[in-house]
Each structure stands twice: as C-alpha cells, then as structure tokens.
Length: 242
Image (cartoon, rainbow, N blue to C red; front, top):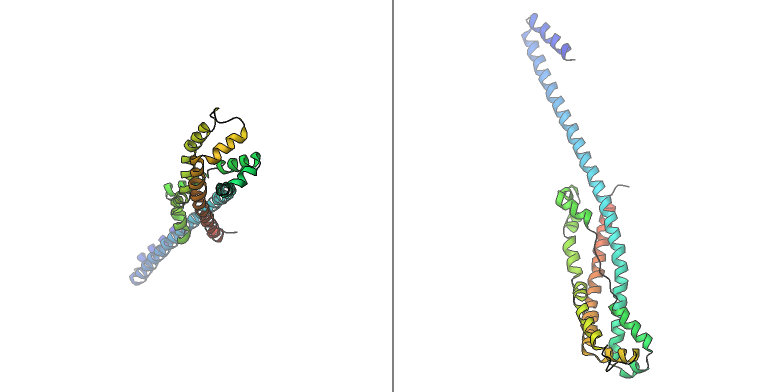
C-alpha cells in the first residue's frame, strides 16, 4: 500500500502537476491522521474493555466475600441473641428470689452458660483490602458502591465495638466469680455454686453491664451492619453483568 501511494506521488512530480500533487499530499496527510485517530480509538476501546473486565472480576470477588460475611455474622448474631435472652432471664430472677429458689439447678446453669457462651465475628475483608491497597478499587464506576466499600472496614469496627468490649472484660470477671464460688468452706454441691453466683455482686454486675446493656447495643449494631452488607450486596448485583 505504501509503495502504491509512493508511485502516485512520483508520477505527479515527474509530470509537473504541482496542484494535483499538493491536493494528493494533503489527502495523504488526512489519511494518516484518520489512521492515527482510528488506532487511538481502538486502543482506547481495548483499554476500556480491559478495565471493565477487571471491574467485573473485582465485583464478583467482592460479592463472594460480602455474602460470606453476611452468612457468618448472621450465625454469630444468633449466639449473641441467645446470650442476651439468657441474661435477661437471669436479671428477672434477681428481682424474684423465690423463682430462683424453686428453679431446677440445671436450668440456672444452662442460663448462665448460654449467657457467657458468646462468639466473636471475624470479618473477611481480604479481597476488599487488597483492592484498596492496589488501587484497583477505583475501577468500580458506581460511586455509591465505591463509597460504601471504602468505608466498610470503619463500619465493621464501629459495629463490633460493644461485643468486643464484652469479650475483653468477661474473662477477668468470670475468673473472679468462679474463684469466689469454688471456696470449699461455702460450697458443698452444685446448688451451693449456683446460689453463690446468684447472690454474687460481680455476677449480677456482669449480667447487667456486659450481657444486657452492652449486649443489647451490640445486637442493634450487628443488625445494622448486616443491613449495610446487604445494601452493598444489592449494589454489587446491579453492577455485575449476568
């Protein structure tokens, strides 16, 4: 093709057709410019397609991670709800001593075990953190989704604050209660242990402060976090190509 245009140019010059040569030269320049523009457009289109493919891959990976967190937190929430419900029942016993006296020892033990048997939610944010650190998070074009993802880790920390405090404080309190109520001079059987704990000020404080007050706030915050996860999941589904 290049040789073809070159031959035309030489023929026009040899025949001294300057006007036609100038027109041809301008036309050739325009063809070169058009060719460059087409090449740039194709390159830009390929780059956009590459970015879109990267975005779709990121969105699908994030969806898997968010769905996992929703499932995990939902299960953890069940244990925290059981803990709160058990603490509330124990609190009602503190106000009704006769009800405690006629309660089977096994039921009292179950209530206190359910109260202290809590689990910690450990969010899986590896993919999200990797996208943020690599800058690939910016390939996400939906601004609402981008903002929600960028602030998610802070949302998680805030939502788990109360349950984290419960976990941090309970070990020392439980150890103090257990130590007191294992004193052989006042404990002869399991009912004595239950009675010791029932009347123990530390046990009552722990029940009210940790598992009712902080527990209630923790449940509210965890439910709000699940709503945020679900909102992000909805945004992801809208952006992912079927």
